[in-house]
Length: 160
Image (tube, rainbow, N blue to C red; front, side, top):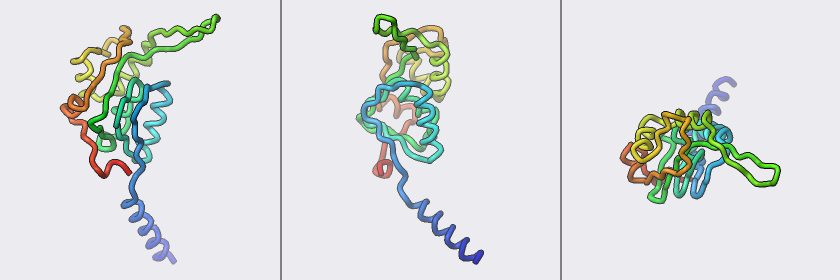
């Protein structure tokens, strides 16, 4: 009986090893609440899934770069990543909204990014080392620039 259980377990492990993993395909993601993206990408990391960027990924969407293992994400020629400091949206009594710089969340985002990503972003316009300075303009990074820092291009096996 013990041998039968071991054989069944080995068979399940082999099926899991050859079964394709799920891929999150990002085509047009403007970002959002930082902690929601940290949770989302942590879950993807824990399940061993892949992130495929095939379009625009801006703001907190880019946090996968520091949460998901490097071998589990890739970019297509359509990828475009955008970076900026974090802000807090507050509803005013008249129904309008104001946005204010969120220094702590900006520091969190900056420190999640891998060193090579931080260096690239600095070169093209956002120095997040000083999180007290708001940088609301989006700094975009192209697939060519991402490839130059070792972020791999997607292959046929990345999308399942």
